[in-house]
Length: 334
Image 1: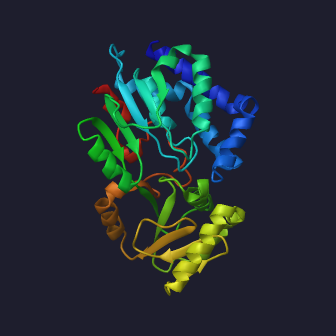
Image 2: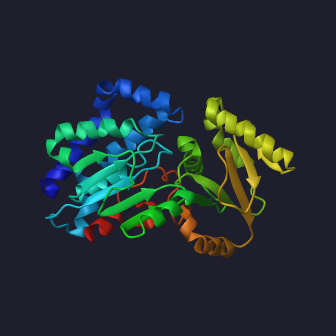
Image 3: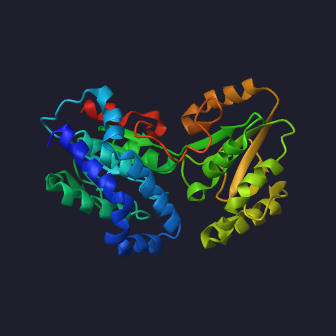
């Protein structure tokens, strides 16, 4: 199967994700929600919708055409160790390996081990040729791979670096995203910021977990645009995190601002807990720019008027690579 044929296959998969999956895989979609309560019906639908938009002939061609990919004579076996913090977060790696003409060995996250199988079953039904290019593993010890793409926490990344020290690899660690406001944002931009904060309950590395605000910025402006997301606290796991973090931080005599569904804390750190958003005031935008430059390796997205647009963090394009590492270019070197 040549590149154009592979593009056509994934285009057909995109059309399937638009409507047919809800009829053909209704039970599996429900099972995914039961096994992982963070994967609500709405969050699953958001993930499927995002991928449906990306899996079009135009988008796939726009992504791949600059590489001028040659057909792979000797397909390599690429192990992909997936995260499971939001639905189908590992699909981009699977897509990238297959569209490049290589074989993928999938180590799924236990938190997201239903949806991906549904999509792969459909993919193989569309193109049976892919059957020999996809396999699943539960353990990676004592197995040989030509390359590794692994996503996990900072702790697991250290293990991956050691265990795969002799392999060609991409190892991704914890990253966070920030937003920089200048105080003159439009209502549309602030509504977009709310999406960046609350989409997928804020569990993704592309979700905004910290704000840089101009001195004397009125937080009520934020609470007003955040209010449409007030229902998140009704979700049991989110609500438990909200209550727990509120109690813990108040016991530590921390000053919190809260509105019943989101905790806000003035803090210099990037890694805010679930149901909490950190913020920091600035006098000089240059100090913020310096912070961003110094912490670039910890940042996934920077949202501002001159960087990533408000409201788009969880709608990445195919060429918006995690950690800024070009996966296609990596696979070309195998």
